[in-house]
Each structure stands twice: as structure tokens, then as C-alpha cells.
Image: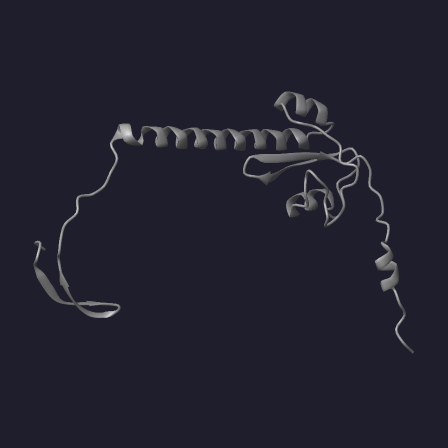
Length: 154
């Protein structure tokens, strides 16, 4: 159509329309120099994501090996280590939280055996965790749970 031209009727899913072209606007695009910083940033993010995925796969393979050692993996991959005094089913513990994927690794049926490594488990786009169970213990019923155990009325 040319500017000012009228066409119609045109049938669409919304009915019949008469159209008039009022103006034509030039496309808006960036030159390579204008887009360069955005493209470079996206390339860096993509490369970091790919590298993170590669490291995750390597860690998964190494953690599954018999006799895998958490300390050596942490040293090789420059991972932070720490102990969590009590990681509770359904509640987790700081700083790990209670992510369902982590809960599944630790409390699977059967649970992750003492001394074995589990994971890696993604806790975010740029965070993963490998766990080593030091011990399992039965949960202590809370006072509320004890009070909730009442016999039905006769």
C-alpha cells in the first residue's frame, strides 16, 4: 500500500475491516558497533553457562566413582566446603535451604548411605552442591506431634 491508500474490506478472525496506511516508519536496528557490547556480554554468559554445565557433568561422574573423596573434589574444582550440623527432611538447613532436588538426594528411599557423595544438585542458575552424609538419625518427635497422638473417643 502507499501512504494514504485505503484497502478493504479485509476479513480477519475479528471480522471485516477497512484499512488506511497513514505512514511508513523505518526499521530500527543497531549497527554492529552499537550492538557489540550486548553481543559480547551474551557470548560471555553463554560460554559461562556451557562451562558450568561441563563442570557439573564432570563432578557428577567423579562423585559417582567408588571411593570418591569430597575434599579432593573441592580442591580440584575450587569448591567451598562446610558442615551442616543438622539437615532435616522437608526443612533442610541454612545455607543449603530445602530444595526438593537436594531433599531427594539426601532422603531418597533408601537414603544416601553414610560416607557416600550425592549430587551435584543445582540450587540456582550458578550454584550447585555436593553432599556427603556423615550420619543419619531418627527424628525426635516434637511436643506438638506427641500431643497430636490421641486415641479416638469410645
